[in-house]
Image (cartoon, rainbow, N blue to C red):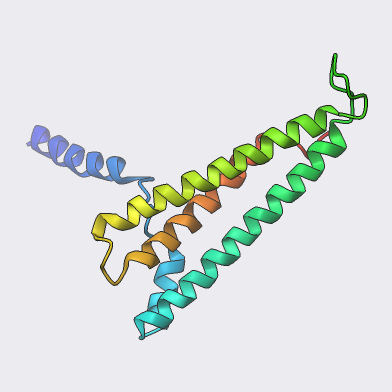
Length: 152
């Protein structure tokens, strides 16, 4: 009896542990809110599109502020460079901006791929892409914050 009880507990715990923290890239409170508050699927998609645009704008503001902080906190000259006006912040910010442009292309392509898993001609294609972008935009600031550009 004890073994059966232990086996039952293990069977309950393992699926719960396996599912814990497993987020779906096309799920989130935004898609639920837009579709729950709008009976018309077109209006719900417009709602989600607006939230995706807001999410993109917030991320762009973070990137702009990070570039500013990089330049402000890295004012030293570039070693052995012919241009004495060029700072470490100029070089760092250039590479940072390029990396963010690449990340945005990654986000676009990944979300197009994720959205197309249900078929490119289906009605719900764009809402999944919008939610995917929102989800990635929520996580990306943590990567940017790891640079500690707000500290001197």
